[in-house]
Length: 338
Image 1 (tube, rainbow, N blue to C red):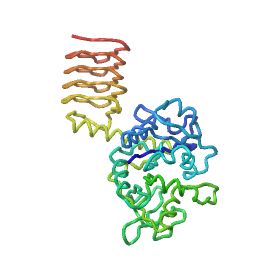
Image 2: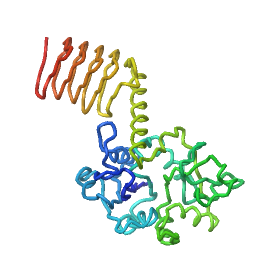
Image 3: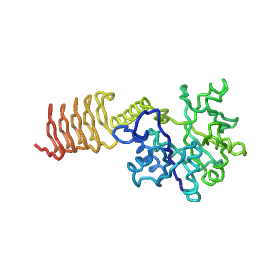
Image 4: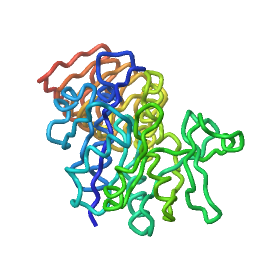
């Protein structure tokens, strides 16, 4: 059973107050948009479709042929955005996954669970939800007596009882593809003149079909980046996730809060990283090294049992058992051995 992903990236991102499209802002050294692209590629094994609008040409230049692009013009809501893919995707897959380019923390494992849940579900929709006291403007999820989703109630329309609900819509869905394309044009226009994908839940339940949801394990996965405050929150969460991974792999981080390891970096066992150390790009660190404090290493290969103190290394190669610093600077192309 084939799954096709649609990534929504057409929003204007005005709250970022930037000339750079929102989804191209850097998060741990890479444009934010790369995270959801890689996540859905790994979960679906297909090339995703991205709906673009504001800043679309810049997004095209960054992603190249990693995705197929569809322009949404004008931007008339999330339901309208998904509908733009109907002609391109109808009849090509069994399921449609919909997620967002400004949700960089979603894990491949979470998306895979969502897809598997829909593949065994008799109804047309499976959605992700989160339990959180801080609603952050998310819609409340109302369930029926059988545990299926009865409705999604947006915060502005919620009653006091509904506002007390702590299960929130994470806005990530897996649809039966045939049902989605048969019904996407039934979304009603809102008072703002837009078409909202959340209305697909009401369309399903009104016809007697069930909508299921499962609660995500990690609330941080739902962080959506709409401001630079959100961007900082997302970067902090991503940094914590990466640091925890390397500590469990046998790397000592003296102070994880001041250690910055980008996603493309690899580290050997028994390496110790001191505070204020930045490991960037495609850096490869061997085993038993001591890095920092106050060190920047960019896309550099470092052998085993090296000690690098208060130095900057840029696109260099360092062989085993080399000591650098304090105040060393290896520039691009440098190759150092004992």
